[in-house]
Image (cartoon, rainbow, N blue to C red; front, side):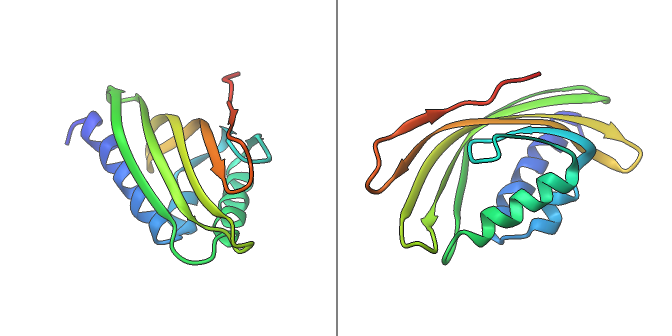
Length: 143
């Protein structure tokens, strides 16, 4: 399998994991010192435990299914390092009753290690649309 196909497969794994609220699968990918810039607070974090905790808080905030759809996937990879960017839509209903419809741009950097691909950097930014609020843009920045 090519490095590019492996990263595309990892994006599909991510889609299945979010839809299934499978935080264990998502938490297994980040490197121990992963850097994450997110669209929701906390806007930046370091370390795979912080990433796992944030994922669980995100899942716990939803009542019912989470819609997660990916499009426009762009991959550049070799045998050691790969970058992937894509748009994804998150939709659903929060436990507060507020509907969520959010388009997000994500960029991930993966490195090949003896244990498989690990995420080194995740940057997301998006346009958040929540009932009762004007839209706002929140962006992440690379270090």
